[in-house]
Length: 234
Image 1: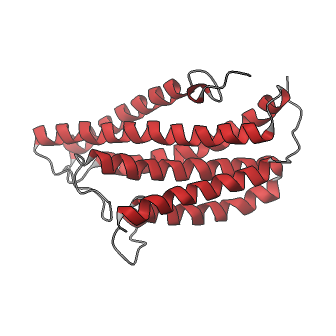
Image 2: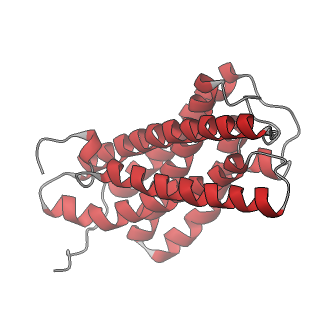
């Protein structure tokens, strides 16, 4: 388990696998768009809505990986502190990879919409009004995916500790996601109008979002630092 490489944790090729899943998902979204175009009217960005599902993938994938690989790594000599640091690195890399793939999806859809002369209408309360604002798209999506992945780590570590704590962590995690996504301008604030103000200035939203992610990962460390590890099944 020595020779830690962020792109290979917790398994070699993990982010290549994520990319392949993303490409398959993009094909499904393309088929949905085709169906809407054939049997209805394309009046908004399909990708903008599809990204909301991907956020929950980041949550569930991180929770499952932590729950599954914590005993494996600790049994092979990795300390709980080092494992937590690797989880934090995974959250950052996963958020970056998914943010890049999301931005690419927006741009690809934008090209298709431009050729077909369809309106690529985005959800309200975004920090960006056009998909060509790539730096803003990357930044806000990084914050969103980072929050979902970090909360997934929190919930996964809570359930590993005990089921009761895991259940208690779910409403806490949801509250964190509400705050994080109001800051990032996605999910709750964009989907159901849960906001009393427009998008916060990025100068406020970005450091606040990063601080929130760091706070959640600090909670993961508190849960893992003395956690009893169950035997690894063979």
